[in-house]
Image (tube, rainbow, N blue to C red; front, side):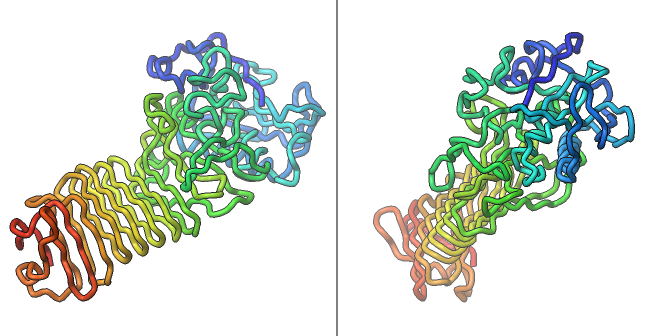
Amino acid sequence: MALAYEDKTSTSQTNSIKNNAFLSGLAFKYSSGFSIWSTFNLTYDLNVGQKPPGEKAGTWSSGLQDAIHLAIADVSSVCKATFTEVDGSADVEFWSYSANDDYLGYSWAITDAANRGVYVNSKSADSGLEFAYGSYDYITVIHEFLHNMGLAHPHDSYAKFPGVKGSGTLGDYKLNQNVYTVMSYNDAAGLKTASGVETTGWTPDSYGYGVLGAFDIAMLQKLYGANKTYNTGNDTYYLPKSDKAGTFYKAIWDAGGTDTFQFNGSQDAVIDLRPATLKLADKERAGGALSSADGVHGGFTIAKGTIIENATGGSGDDSLIGNGSANKLLGRGGADDLTGRNGKDILVGGNGMDTLRGGADADVLKGQKGDDQLFGNGGPDKFVFSNNGSTDVVHDFADGSDRLKLIGFGFVDEDDALQHFDAMGANGVEFLFQGTVIEVYGVDKAHLDATDLIV
């Protein structure tokens, strides 16, 4: 991957780019200017069968052509730049060349009329991989294409990411890697999995690479505007379950609707709905919290400006983390840990011994089957229980604010249900009914009344 030549007459940066460590780190020309297209309606040509300027002609596999079309689709999905394929002279020229060297490709500046374009070395690419989405070959294509759109490396001498000393260093909070920007030379490394193990930074060439990171999206949108029409429906994004061709890291840009991250596997998984902040003070979350499963080199972050509302876990011991919106977190199987944070959240544990934590707003916490631990953590919360033989614990019931909802017990009214609560220590009550036990801390028997219950 090679550095594109900066445009010496390009427009000045806006202050928002200059003052942001990550945006300026992806901008050319000493953080004061960069090459961008003067129009957002661009043409491109694949030049299949043509000899590239100054190079020997390379092969054009169907995989390379598909990769270029995927890269163009990804870029146009996040920003207002549009691309029309033409046969002949175009704004963005794609070339396949053949050379016996270690270069995978390079990009010439848009101001170089004779040579401008994206060049991919077909001899260096692994022909067996056919440029699969998430492969090392694919990241070469999107990397060089983004150079042509005006993005630099995060390790270039004129504006590095914080803590980056050279191309091989991850920098502060390990943000110089292709999970967060495909302009990085570093593979996914040092990422915490659900079990706390860190990824090693090496994967086979066929999978495990980023296809577009939150920093890339932020820079493209700063240069060309955000695409506010992309994925405005109710979308579900499924976390990868295994390492194989087509497994990748990607920052999700979603412009609207009620959306879900879902994992259908048996491994432990982390699903974290907090988007990228682009702020170094937020540490790793500057590039977006990572959602992924144990043992899988792939997953999702969330681009700044995108809200994913819901998370659904698999059958393992999952950790589901909400954001500031009204989230619905569903653990399903396993011993899950659900954290709602701010917003009026609905937390449903599912089967297994789960821990549910609300936030400062009015949340609904429902443990379902298994012996569950429930924390309202402020706000007028509703704790929901079924007659299923479980032993659940409410750790911080706020009398006069929180309520206990009892489903399927057959009580006539709240006064009838109240008869099944007994004192438990100085500041707690215990509910006993047909093998179902609910321990409630924060209210004593004298203060618990029918207004605290819903039947």
